[in-house]
Amino acid sequence: MMFKSIFIALIISLIISISKCNPLSTKGLTLDLIHRDSPQSPYYNPSLSPSQRLANSLRRSFDRVRRFNCSKSPRSDVILSEGEYLMKYAIGTPPVPSLAIADTGSDIIWTQCQPCAECFKQELPLFDPKNSRTYKNIPCNTDSCKSFRRSSCSNNNTTNNHCLYSEVYGDKSFTNGDLATDNLTLGSSDGKTVSFSNIIFGCGFRNGGVFGGVESGIVGLGGGKVSLVRQLGQGRFSYCLVSMSDNESSSSKLNFGDSARVSGDGVVTTPLVKKEPDTFYYLTLEGISVGSQRLEFLNATYRADGNIVIDSGTTLTLFPAPFYNRFEEAVRSFIKLKEIQDPQGALTLCYFSEGDIKNIPDVTVHFKGGDVKWKYENLFVRTSDVAVCLAAQPLNLGFSVYGNLAHTNFLVGYDLVKQTVSFKPTDCGKY
Image (tube, rainbow, N blue to C red; front, side):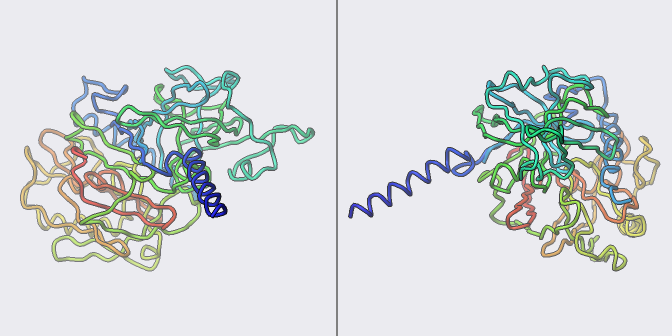
């Protein structure tokens, strides 16, 4: 009897210990995601028209695509910046506020640090590791150091050398500094905060590139070992992106832990495909139906598993030109309006229309294992008061990109343990 009591006490103690180590083990976290061009964003410019804001978003989207061409229940505030989202968090003890690009196309978490040899301008104070009681440099030749692909040692001639990191992005932005651990604090949409200890991050003392002056660095939400998703221990996150028309009154959401579960009626699930680099999230696109016409991907190359990257930071959906041309022609066959050139000069198929286009075709995206039915806001986007355009574009990368307009008004969940992505039709303005 005594042994049984001791055993039960040990189990209870273990559960409490696990709960303290990882706040997500017993609950989830939900954060606000604020579109870069919404009134809630520090980037908001009230003098721009909706079409001008969209034009800027499309430009950022094309710039971002260069990054992919590398072979040739907690929530946080997220704001679209340079085609991506920003997320509020704090680092260190006491916590120092930071605002970073939340990027599904990156792994490492990094922020600019004092003393900074080369830094871009930011509005928030730089993080000074000397002022944090919980900051620790990671030693060389440790698993934590080796977990980041582009790590090195500060001084190979001493026994006290520590781990350095280096990252260069496709748009030529870069960061270099110390790889370290510290407490990371996230603030949820309901005003509560959750702190996570010993989070691996980069303390950058040489940083540069295309940054807007508001953000302090990047929070990687990719599939690699040092991404925030992996480090939080649950291997699960989801988001719900509001439509452009709802940006004025609602914010998108980012979920971690139990809050990130996607379940219930209407859920469609497709496998993630493991490929290099493991940062990106690869799905398998089998075809698209427009009305009763099913368009198969063209050949063995495009039909291969992992032929499309799902990316919340790219605005448009991008297809190889031969497939895009067939898709465009199928949509054109249903729309009997006058075709015009895109006033922004970015999109290919546009119509003269002062309101929403009526009688649009049913469009279904056929992923391996499940079909996702697009709504109006996934298929068309308004680029001026009189122009409505197809929200897709041809681009030859050797694979496709499933951009964030296609995610609008879906709860999109990533499960890195089960290796799946799930879609659930959702009114994200009310989520």
